[in-house]
Each structure stands twice: as C-alpha cells, then as structure tokens.
Image 1 (cartoon, helix red, strand yellow):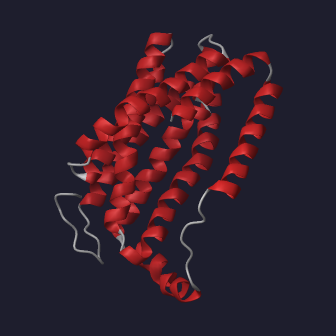
Image 2: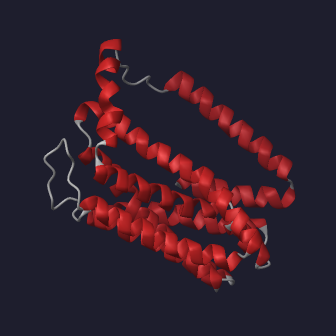
Length: 254
C-alpha cells in the first residue's frame, strides 16, 4: 500500500505530462519486479503428483459448501463495485473538472489510509464475527460509491475515499481469514484460489457493466453500486448461517 500510494501519485503526475512516460515507467518497474522475483525470492512449496491427486476432490467439496458459495457470491459483487475505482471513478473525477493528478492523489489517499489504519482496525475486526465484518465492509464500499451522486468537490471525494477504504480494510483481511477457517487444511490453497478467482471475475464484470451503465446514466451506476453493496452484505450474512459441511465451525467466528 505504500507502493500504491507513491505509485499512483507519481502516475497522476506523469500522466499529466505524457502517458508515454507512464507506460514506460510501468514497464520498467514491472521488469525490475520480475528480475527480483526470479533471482531473490524463495520458490516456496511444491506439491507431488500424489498430493495433486488427493486434491482433485477439492472442487466437489467447495461446490457442496452452500455457505461458502454464498460468500463467493458476496465477494464477486463486492469486487465488481470495488473495481469502479479504476474504471468509472476516474471518469467521474474528470467530469467534475479535475485533472489526472487529482485522481492519482485520491487513489494515493486510499493507500495512505490503509497503511495508517489497517493494523489497528484488523485487530478489532479479528475478534468479531467474520461474516458480519465482511457484510459491514462491503456495505460501506457500496455506500461510498453511491455517494458519488452528490460528491463532486475535492473534500467530498476525499470523504468518499475514506469510507471506501474503511470498507476495504474491514472486509478484505477478514475474507481471507474466513476462507482459511472454512477450508479443510489439505484444500486450503484451492479455497483461497477460489477467492482470487471471484475477485478477478469481479475485475472483468465490474468495469464492463460499470462503463456501459455510466455511458447511459452516471447516477444510475452509483445508485446501482449502493444496491449491489446491500445485496453483497446480505449474501455474506447468509453465508454465516450455513456451517461448513466438512468442518466443526465455531459459530462465534462465522
């Protein structure tokens, strides 16, 4: 998130000067990351063929877990809302009369807030119901984007970023913890992968639907984000009412 804050601030400044500089800089930093990863990072755990055969039932286990499927639905909708920050939110900032550097600064504010608040907030959310915290965070993200109906000044946009970031801080770490709690130990990686797939799918669906809706009516998009946030929260709460079919679940944690 420090990199997010610095990168987006610098990216907004570079884009004001030349998008070519932005793309060249992105390529250079990506290549540097690849080289560092290849040379310096440990390779991690590898599975054997025997272990891979043992994991073939993981998909069936996930599909049989109704509560986990409800959770994945919540993640998909929440991710689709969240991805408006890199698709239609910059269009809104531009329509309000501000430059790309202002958008970059607003995005950097998200990273700064996460750096300052994530650990203390996570220490609070970690002692509470997983699914209720996911519902609260997702609802806050939906409400923050719904506020763009009226948020057009820099202070109002900064307040919107604050609410959105608080929602992200509340929901995101707890979501990973919920998956770890929910999954049998030998299939934990597959469960976490399904979480990643839902977020990636939201990154496809969200900008696609968002930009199409924005072209027709920006207000309809922002209202839709609010409604979708409530729906995602309801799915998360419903997930907590379905214990895992393969685990003894602590009901105080779900």
